[in-house]
Length: 281
Image (cartoon, rainbow, N blue to C red; front, side, top):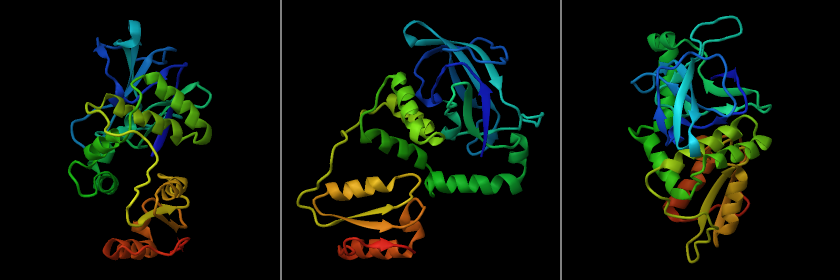
């Protein structure tokens, strides 16, 4: 992945999937800077999933009350090397390239993308095919609607704010402990603010009284779901048993034979590993 920084004032940045404004989009001039207070939305062109596309940032003036917006300019990011400007492309159909964030000093607008010319990527199976295959495997896992299903499940889990300002505040808070990914994940939550089906539950401790032992697996340096979450859930459950994987992976079952053996034994016979078990393989 490559990153690009564009000079910006203090402005709002949101995921394109979280916008529910009445847009007016006249022919927009190519801009060289962003106006403080305007809304900037990143878009990728194209019509075929898992293909590289150019990235365009559109700038909007917000109307009274923030319920309407008029586009007043756009900036298409470079597709060729030009001095310090490297080519950058987005993946059509990937939400991650639609998320923008301000840099820590508030002076730059940053986003993620691929450091390659889109046409070169799409035309070369040597460059493009392995990356697309890895993306498909991670995002879909053999499913044709894995991403859609993930969004549907996530958005039913708990209520979220419908105020875009709440995500800006969350991004600022998370940036203190996770400068790179904290704001990105905070804005990623905004997609659920416009999901058409309301959540079915509220966040609360889980106890599962009367259940048989429940096996909880956590990896000490899991980059996606912190180990502290597994510890907390195991303690909340009336009969929780924590199995610890000492490692740096996400989804310990994929990487640890020890975890697989313990999980499969539990699923087949209901027998949990001894309390305090740590898998190091």
